Amino acid sequence: MKRVRVRFAPSPTGGLHLGGVRTVLYNYLFAKKHGGDFVLRIEDTDQSRFVDGAEKYIFDCLQWCGLVPDESPLHGGEYGPYRQSERKEMYRAYAEKLVEKGHAYYAFDTPEELTEMREKFKSDANPSPQYDRSIRMRMKNSLTLSEEEVTRFLSEDMPHVIRIKMPENESVGFVDMIRGEVHFDTALVDDKVLLKADGMPTYHLAVVVDDHLMKITHAFRGEEWLPSAPVHVLLWKYLFGLEKMPQWAHLPLILGPNGKLSKRDGAKYGFPVFAMNWTDPKTGELTEGFREKGFLPEAFINLLALLGWNDGSEKELFSMEELTEAFSMERVHSGGAKFDYEKAKWFNHEWIKAARPETLRSEVECVLDGKNIKVSDSALLDKVIGLVKERCTLLPDFYEQSKFFFETPKDIDLTPIKAKWDQDKGNFFELIGKGFGDVQNWKAVDLETYFKQKAAEHKLKPGDVLLPLRVMLVGGKFGPGVFEIAELIGKEETILRIKHVLKLLA
RNA sequence: GGCCCGUUCGUCUAAGGGCUAGGACACCACCCUUUCACGGUGGUGAUACGGGUUCGAAUCCCGUACGGGCUACCA
Image (cartoon, rainbow, N blue to C red; front, top):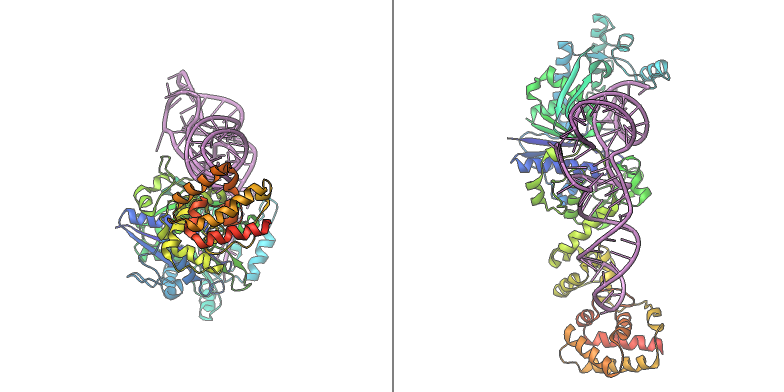
């Protein structure tokens, strides 16, 4: 039985970004494909950074995407608790065990002493000195202090952390599901903090302890974690045995125009980077999400899945079911992918075109409602959606594309009519205005036949009178077939709009 | 600086030693057309560079360059 987990750290900068959702998606697809469990964990190890409501926000985003986890803080499961703060006691025991075995040590250095150390050892050759094997013997820790001092400090509750003691010269490697064998020289990795002074674990300790306790078999995360993988491998080796370590997959990064995609990029280039709207609780700053921008969750998932993976064919449109079927970790790329908003919009457009009107109904209702257009007739709304959906890339486009079905156009662009307007056409439309009143069967085809026949009688080419008719009905040069529009807005309204524009032209 | 990862059209990618390096987005042209779209046809456009290995390299190896990530008591 496979168990895949994903972890989230709600942070003040907030928001569930593209890379995050894609990681969840790949976790989800892998778990579902192999009949496994898909577990969501919440990293709230740093209370100063934890944001109230962020947990529910993440869950809401995943729900919108259709990625509801089997186990999570908000969803239950038998391996809980799933919040790190609720598991605090478990971690210290493991950290102490490492100290006993000689794989970790207590460090009493204050934050000030650490910055001092970094300043002192900083040089052009080494711009960022680390707490590593070359430095640790000059610091205040249980390796340099006497046993009595250490015992005294501990009994006096002197603030301290527990650091891993990286071996002097060892090669640590593992097989990444995407990259194959990856090796690190332990001499070049620093002594990472495992347990913080407040008693909370760091990610490094928590991820290993939790994965063991929750019987995780596969762990996917972003490529930015690769450099700390040797720490995790070592912890598995010391604590639970390498043979029980989950299989790792380090997913390629999603890049913005300059490096790792950030919230800033979204603001700068005008595209969303979060799944759903996120308001920074500190600044009150709102960052628009894909949902609010008008993306369909199916399209969002589709575009995300293809950012770093493909099935080897030329197929690009995948439903969640098709993804689950076709997905395989072997075909996930190792290189980062630059996010292209134009292509993202194309995916949405495709999904809107392919959607049946009734599945779009509530979303469109919502868009129109926001513009104070209430539609009570859902059969009518479905017909309208069917007519205009191929012209809509994002959900809000439905307003511009369909408002004239529900309200008389306010601003009418007369320039296309005026260009070729004359008395002849004026007379013709006067006649049509009256003639339409006598049409029995108010259907698009019949209207078209009637209109074109009348035009022929007046020796007018259909092309010369169709554009004016369109402008009269919709207010500009856009929209679906004019007779379809006329049919849906009805006889009275059609005649009204023709007469109104005629008056404007007089 | 050190370590790690990566590199095929502008972007996402296909091709796993063997046809003129294929598709999609974007862009351009044309066709369709009552407008705007949809659709259709075509076009511009790529194997970072240098060495090997091989009959043959986008593909395997080495080096260089470039890009990215990490280098916190953040994840």
